[in-house]
Amino acid sequence: MPVEKYLCVPLHRPKVAFFEFTACEGCQLQILNNEATLLDFLSLVDVVTFREAMQERSDDYEIAFVEGSITRTDEVKRLKDIRKKAKVLVAMGSCACFGGVNQLKNRFNNPKWVKEQVYGKFPVESEVARPLEDIVTIDLKIYGCPIKKEEVEKIVTNLVLGKSVNHPKYPVCMECMANENICLYKLGEPCLGPVTRAGCDAWCPGSRCGCWGCRGPADAANVEQIISIMEEHNFSVDTIIDRLECFGGFRGFAEELKKKTVKSKTKKKRAG
Ligand code: SF4
Ligand code: SF4
Ligand code: SF4
Picture 1 (cartoon, helix red, strand yellow):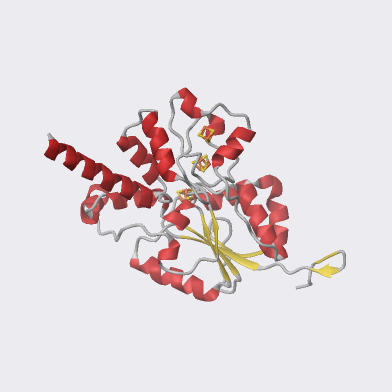
Picture 2: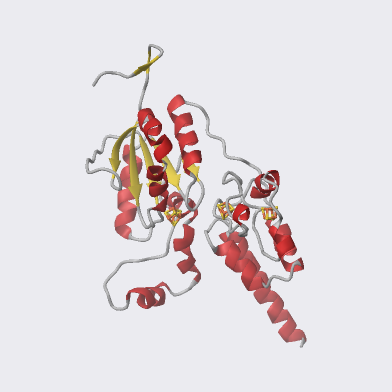
């Protein structure tokens, strides 16, 4: 195959493969949906495996984009195998990065009961949902549920050009304010924008919908403070916990809040 050149410089188009685990495949769809720039994107990389888009398959790839969380033992084995083959492994989307919406089932302490409620007696293996980095080393994360296609293209361009990939360190609030949105707290809606990593251009608040934290915590996110703000706005502890638990990025904070609530309830009971 002739080497493609740009201004007489031979281009290296890395071989990339896309894989899905327990997921809705919405992140992969985001990439295919971007028709206006899809051809430019494809000129940068040599896609060798992408089940949603092509029949060909190859085990010879340099960059693996992996979508979904891990919920079965065969997925553990398959993920380890991908890790062995790929030079760069990218976790794509909230499911891969944090467990995503799939990890909501983990909050029921009895996985057997959850499985029965969903599948009845049908023999399906479905254990707790785990992010990829619980099993293998991840080189890069692309946040969001779903990922934002413009961001993926920027990240892939940087990877191909050998440039570093930097996610915004600041929270969604910065983008929201730059877009001159009305703050949803003023409209009586909760929002995790003050603590969630930016990069989505305040997608949800821009549509008058509070942020649910799909991109996980921003650097130095003051989650204690956002819990206080939500309490000041009279949102119940259950509302706060629901929001913190939704995508898995704030799960640790939700667990802490649950423990504190149980403790304070026990204290009140004893005092009363
Ligand atoms: S992160 Fe969201 S869009 Fe992407 S696979 Fe998971 S549930 Fe689907
Ligand atoms: S709506 Fe949310 S993201 Fe926007 S300024 Fe208010 S708290 Fe921040
Ligand atoms: S506003 Fe929040 S929930 Fe919505 S896309 Fe951005 S990070 Fe995700």
